[in-house]
Image 1 (cartoon, helix red, strand yellow):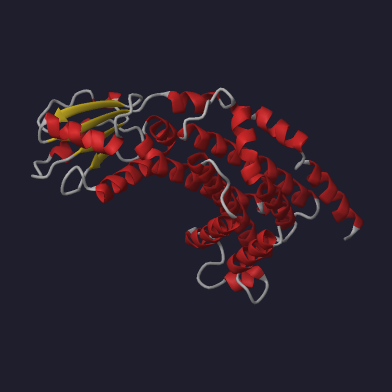
Image 2 (tube, helix red, strand yellow):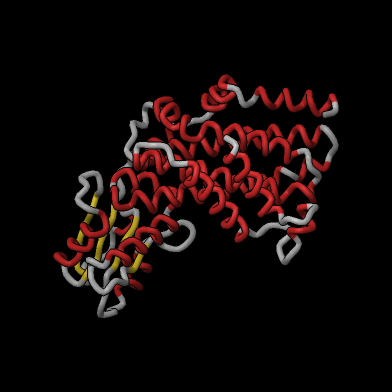
Length: 335
């Protein structure tokens, strides 16, 4: 390795030490995330009558006392919908209640948080699971609160937190590769920025997943200490891989770098979720599956090199996606 590259590797390796990690965590503000997660969600359920609304609400959310549930018939007045996080409407006779709720529900940006339950009855588990997933997808900023207050929402809430963080890291990895076309200085800036931003996003993701699973949010260090044995080794590998990708020119390095950021974040998030749910580390086979899932999912992102150009971007016989997955498989197998 040339002397300059060796010096840069040593410099960025220091960022992966415990001291560097502690410094990054100290820079983060967890207060807003904690306040959001601890704010009890308020949900209104509308159905043909109040008893049917109550039955649906409890089927959807369980009997958690931390969840603020209100039940009304479809013909009830809808003047205060702005005080609710979301409204669920079950209108089997199609009386137009869903449209009335949309009109009455204020929305600052995007669609109003009004959701139709389309199951044949309130005990339809598949329809309930689909409704929870749809709600969390539209309300990602409230996912931690819903999952924390309402155990039936935990799977959907954790998935949204992991997916949103993975996409954010992939987007940042794509954009941050642009400075690396500037020799030496640009590459150094890209590597350093990657480590700091992607690491901060991952740490906050772990904290949110801990919130979803009921951990004490005032003990942020306890949450991170608890999860570090689960994601620690992969965390170091992802850091080194991202740094190496930052020194590759834009055309050759962008796609592998995005795959590393996305698949690494997704795998770490799913490993953390598994640990908080099951109380044990995922197996090596499970981790491999998480990375494969990430490498497959990233193919759906709007990246340069689509339309069959991945081969050219990767600079070889394998596509960048398959190469990244193969490298990760080898790294885990040799662990």
